[in-house]
Image 1 (cartoon, protein in one colour):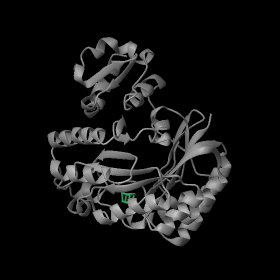
Image 2: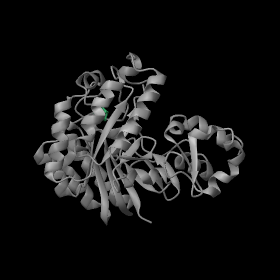
Image 3: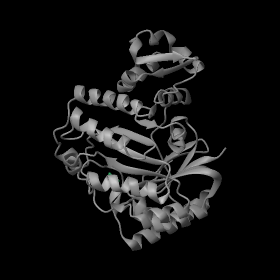
Length: 350
Ligand code: SF4
């Protein structure tokens, strides 16, 4: 079976206040050596891929190298090939370079269309830059454009979120990822926490997002992901459906040939090693538990053979938190808000 290929591009021009993804300062010299290391690893692992995802960091900073990396990989015809992009870097010629390299899906880190919120997050772009970036992607020939949206950020209110959602839905995007801000310890926000909306307001804003996106033709297919028909992210679906993927680069994770491993957050070590060093990740739950945990993130839910074993515990879950349709159990939007608690309760009796 074809796998997914994740390539981490660990470079950013500036660190955002909330972000703990692994990245270092970008330089041309480092980008060249990094590209060579990625290609060495693609050759060493081999395999055939039907999705490729360049995540980061800021993959668009390596736009001129992405074609070489893709050429090194055996990619199935019609594969989904995504690159994450920062609105500040989405110049028409850069977008054309990505398209020519074979990238056919772009994921834009918009986060908000409210300038006060963007500035509090430490983002380099403002709302106009984000708007222009999405329009430039469309004009360059990208038909599959995803936008990231962040919930529960400093200064966000139901009104400002409504304006952001309106702006986003008015642009040519076919996919929206809406994540709640998480304060990570080893970040400027972790060291000096900002004031953010409380838990009840955050829950309200999540439900507001689900409703507004549904009204605009974006169906929810995962806790945080929404798509126009046929535009779900095939690469990310592999994670939730427990299909195999190879991760290349520092901080990348893999589920490959039945093994799970990660790579250390150290760009120098990655560049200087003939093949990336695999570190075993914390012990994964058993396959059954993992299928339940991952499957209940998806709106398609899990099949009957997976939920039958905890049918009795399910009676303790309020009815508005889940549904059973055509034999499949799935969580509702209200249920998604409490998915960790619900899944723990269901699996506790196993
Ligand atoms: S949010 Fe994106 S651009 Fe900002 S520091 Fe993290 S990876 Fe870099």
